[in-house]
Image (cartoon, rainbow, N blue to C red; front, side):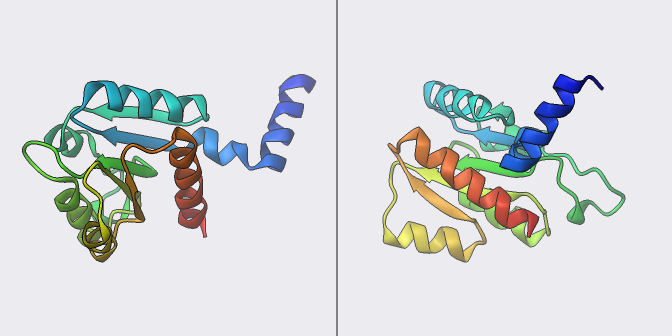
Amino acid sequence: MSLESAGCALRAVRTGKQSQASAKIIVADDDDDFRSLVTSTLRSAGYDVAAAPNGLDLLDRLEFDSPEPSTAAVFDAVVIDVRMPGVTGLSIAEGLVEAGYRGRVLLMSAFADDALIAEALRVGAYGLLAKPFPMSDLVFEVRQLLARRQM
């Protein structure tokens, strides 16, 4: 390891960016443009990001990396649109939480209201972002949920 790369690693540890840079996130949204915006924003924030065009593709991409699948998560966070064809984000969030999936779930919706927010929290999601939202809010919420995941 060079002196320069050691210095970068030390700065990453001091600022907390080392865990952020290594965090893996998957984004599922059936709106191609919005999914691309969310994905590129999270990549710019230093995350390793994958994308899925719908809930079924998301479920196919979620892998478990241990003999006890309910205890492992290949992705540290799952960011899901609530309304998608095939399977809803709420259904996915509820299923992941019931299965004991360790990755945190953040939902997004253009149809957010108090009832939907309450339902998202009831099924075990970390939270729900109401579309449209500033991308800075997305990055903030992802940082918060990852920090809570490490506690």
